[in-house]
Image 1 (cartoon, helix red, strand yellow):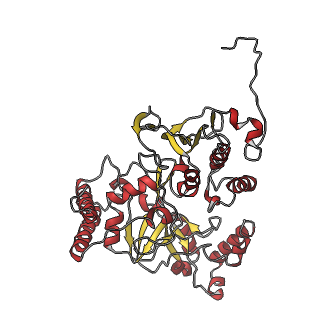
Image 2 (cartoon, helix red, strand yellow):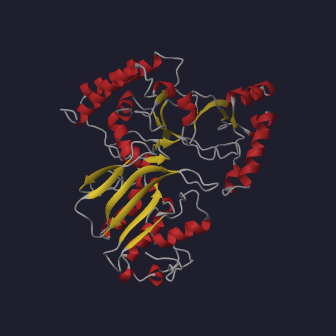
Image 3 (tube, rainbow, N blue to C red):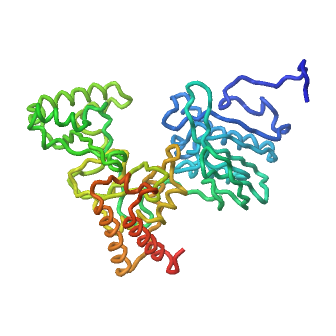
Length: 439
C-alpha cells in the first residue's frame, strides 16, 4: 500500500501497441499477466493505416481482412507468450470476435500455438459514461498455454445484469461449453442444398431507391417509368411490412432511358456519387445496381440478414418474383418447402445462435458460415413430404393473420397460438429427421 507522497511510479510507454516490440516495453520473462481494453473497431470501420497494421501483425493469415482491430492484440499476445508460456492474458473485446467468421480465422493459429480459453464473460452491455462514447456489447476472454482443469464461463440473462457462473472443462471460441473447434467460411453448401446468394447492392447514394411517396411523385411525372419500378426489400422492410421501391433498369436501352427524363436525372446523380466513391469504375454503369445477384423475375426464398435476438425464429418467406432484394437479405432461388422447413426449424436457429454473427445482440445470418456449413438431414420421400406439409402449415398459420406483420407474428409475447403450434410440430419433425428418438 503506497501512501502519499508516491515514491514509485508506473512504468508507462506511450507507443503504438501494434508496431512496438512488447518485449522491449517489459521483458516477457518478468511478466505474469497481460490485460487490457483494446480499441473497438470493426473490419469495416478501420482506416487504411489500421488495416495495414492488422495485416502486418497477422503476417499472411488467410482472410485477415475480415478481422476486427482487437484481434491484432490477441495475435501479438500469443507471440509474446512464445517467450514465456506461463503468461496469462485477458482482453475486453467486441463480441463479434466470438461470432460468425472471425473465430474460424484467428483461433486455429492460437490453438496450434498451444493457447486455451481459460475463462470468459459472454456478451454483456457496457455503458461508458464518457461523452460521445456509444454503448457497446462486449465479451472478456482470458487465455493461456497452461489452462486450468476447470474453467469459468460467465453468462448474462440480462445484458446489463449480473453474470451467472458456470464451471466447465473446456470453453469453445463461441464462448459456450465445448470443444476448441471453429467453423470457417465455406464457399458451397456442405450438403449440396441449393445455392444461397446475397441480395442486390445499390451503392447509389439513394438515387435508385424510393419511398412510396417518392415513387408516386415519380410516376405522376413519368408514367412511362412504371415497368422499371419494383418493390425493394431489406430485412427491415420484409419483417416490418414497410414499403420501399427501386428503379430496376437492367435491360433498359439507351433510347428508353433518355425518353424518361425524371429517371435519367436519377441516373446522372448516381454517376456523380459513384465517381467520388472508392470504386469509381461503378460510374460506368450508373443505371444498374453495383452488385446484381438476384433475378427479380424468378421465385425465391428470402432470409433476413439481421433479426432480433428476442425472436425464437428468424422470419423467412417465399416470393414469386417481381421484387428486388437488397444486400441486407439473402435469397435462395427456386427454394422448396423442404428448404424452408429445415431453415425455419429450431435446429437451424440453434445453429445460427451458436456460430452466427451478431449486430450488437441481434442475430446476423451469413451465407458462408451459417448456411453453407449447416448439415441438412438425409430424408426418405415420406419424411420429405411430411416436412413440406408441416412447413406449409406454418405459412398457412401466418396467412390467417393478414393484417399482422412478421414482426408482430414473431414477437414472443404475442405470437399467435396457431403459429406457435405449427412451428412446434415442424421442430419435432425436423429433430426426428436427424435422430429418430428426437432430442
